[in-house]
Length: 220
Image (cartoon, rainbow, N blue to C red; front, side):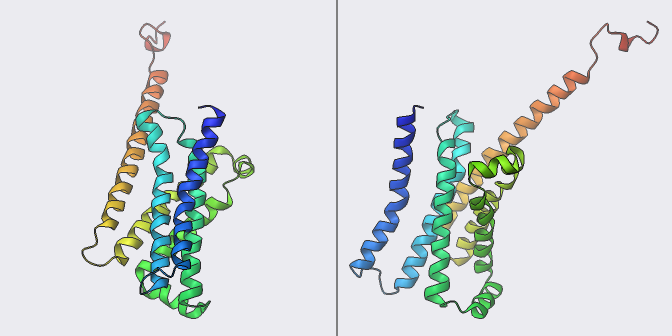
């Protein structure tokens, strides 16, 4: 992909990811946030956190399944947008719902399992955002950095469970997110098993003595 095309693609991602915030700000300006504005804002930010997080996790499966290279260039950008949205989601909950009443917030985290899972998702994304720069990749090393950033899947699992436990009976949207996550995990699991199979075969080929070699004839 050419540099102008890559820049245009990233600009499109910026537009798509910022559009929900612009719409939310417009609805707040026009007093169109429904009967419970705090709940509406919190839920909107939470929904977009999960959507963008799953989109970032879909970039590698797209490369695996379709052989595309350009999705990898968007993975970090989408991950940072997911982190920004979850921070806003947490900020609305902590400021507007509790106004920094830390004891009550902690009690709510411990008491309500769905909030516990949401906090685990946020905490899982923190080290990923902190190590998202090229400098941190060099400091950690590519292998260690890759291992650390597998926490994105932990965050996604926690976020999906958070939504499933939060949603009311009969709401189907959380289950679609769960299905999407299972598919993404399935693709990664399939790729991992295929890679391990190739490594075993390569190892077996290098350790198996060739026919007619001195290793097969101890008397030679």
